[in-house]
Length: 493
Figure 1 (cartoon, rainbow, N blue to C red):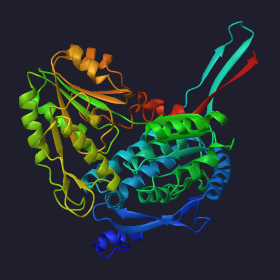
Figure 2: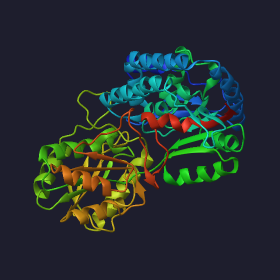
Figure 3: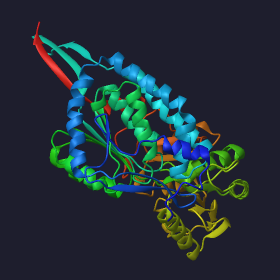
């Protein structure tokens, strides 16, 4: 790998030069205590574009020290003041759309248009929770025996640790930070080592918006455990929110048990997408395309298994395959690109293994099925048909632009196959029969369902899953409850 930015445009170099690459600890930008750094590369070229500080356990504990001070600083702010900070953050994110989108595209590889969409999505969480910050619920009621009165109130959980994934560098942090700030909780963020630059820029904007410096720390690190282990063992930490794989999530839950942390887990997915014979074909094709290809398929909400009823299957497969085959693949900064690079070589290798496994067992490649180019980490938009029951990609999360299509005959068969997974994050279904839509949605084992639409994530709705997809909710009125404790005061009349 070559460590250079010479191949980047002047605008790309300008954006990268404007990002702080040290650790943010309690409002102070500083080098890692061990002096180490870690590389960040452009996955479209494989070229190193930046180096960021590589935090140690000592840095993690320094961030927790700051968070404890930050708890007191946030307590001095009124709900309206916290709301104004959140609103200002939303406005600053929007004002820096071009810069943030360029950072995301450079470190993740997705097209600029998608990056701009994520910027708007991330900003919406700060806007939404600016409203929630002044709407804490409380209650006053007479005690059952008539001897007094009970007052029920909410208070912040306390210092919180957020471990975010690489696939949505801004949005995954935003939907944790915004409710935490609204509730009055100081935060420590450990962004993914593959895509840390966008979160570092968000840290700058939070400080500019007026967040108390001690209330936010951002720790970039090669080793997530070097950060999480000492923090999870420290009783001053009171909340953990993690987005990532189920395997890692299970380990974190076990580690959090010793100090009985409040825990939120947004884990893996294996989303089914059901298309019934009575579906509007064009709506179903476009919805399936969006559900499959958002973020290049590198999303836990991505349609992992497309199940199509036999009567509509030939027409659906033909139109959907044509839609996938027409995607322009290239560097995300190029005009008209619909699919950028995958995040790294490991991701390309995993996608290739899953496709090769399915083909070896009898699946047919309708389009794609191979790596694209010699430079960067690109994989072609792929449609597989006749996918057999024992193909690994029916059980494992693909996290790439690969759409396996299976055919079913009856509603009961479709629901049974859709639910035949340990995951339960999101499901999609397409039908013009409203009664069927409600009936099938009720029978699908998932925390979210999209009916006749392929993208349903929204800051005003509770995002989260069931089974091995985790627990807790992010977004909506429910999202702030993850950061609030309930307290009651009993007193005589």
